[in-house]
Image (cartoon, rainbow, N blue to C red; front, top):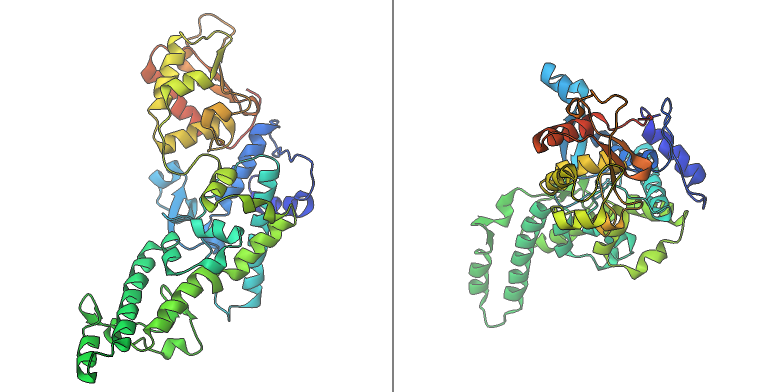
Length: 408
């Protein structure tokens, strides 16, 4: 059932994730089975796992709602909040003293995530979770090599501030070890160690994690001000808590869940940035689709050939898509918003475009929408009278035709 897909997904993974059988999904009340609904299952679970109310990821929240409902009534009940981070998803740090029930709940979700990721790789499916570089480094057990520079991969703003503070620490160490300076000269130069003209003592910092006042970096940290003498300790603790201490429960749960499906050590041959392509397919940065590549990779059939106006118009429209339009088109045609590594050339079976036929010759193709067979990457495209009409109909079909599988 789509309404409880995350809960059912968790149940499914606990029972079947370690099975070597290929997982195939069918939705209640829908006749569609096979590749399309199964790819969409991985896509829907990926989206559900980014819900802000689950409290799994750090980042800003964005509201996604039903367009019609939002236009008619700005009621928040129609909106769902999701987490977005420009640098990619990384676990929300949790405090040492958080309730054990909350810790268990978070741990279970991340354990499920590990199983979900492993099963997707095992079955050669794509997931749609934009993880950060440090997340993949954790998967490869590289967390012991983390330092302040790695903060940039999860929070560029905090990284910038902490790097600036670390620069002050390095200057202080240099002054402390400079024997040529007299005590007065040293003290005078120490007083000039500021952050944009503001002395460290006046920055109002204490030993809590920036942005998370409930997480103390050390016992009694809330009542401990940061000054020039303890700044090195503060910088070290912020980096350690953000990258390791605050997320170790979650990331160890991911590795544990993954290991229960197949050995996570198998990933050791890859670099972190290669893992993103293995799990999520095409790279996250936007690349426009190329007309020539489309014509070499896609297959016109049953009424169309490479010289057909409709095929030329289709490839031209696709080549002009922005990132959101690409994702909507792929979701509609294949059931998954991302392409495998190798783009359209690696799509199995290849995208096949056939002419949509009608029972009576009086029918005007411009009155009809295209339809798809997602399990075969099969697009049934009416022979529209113009490129403009085709673009409008494709956009409408992509918007209306998602999240249900019936016989066309």
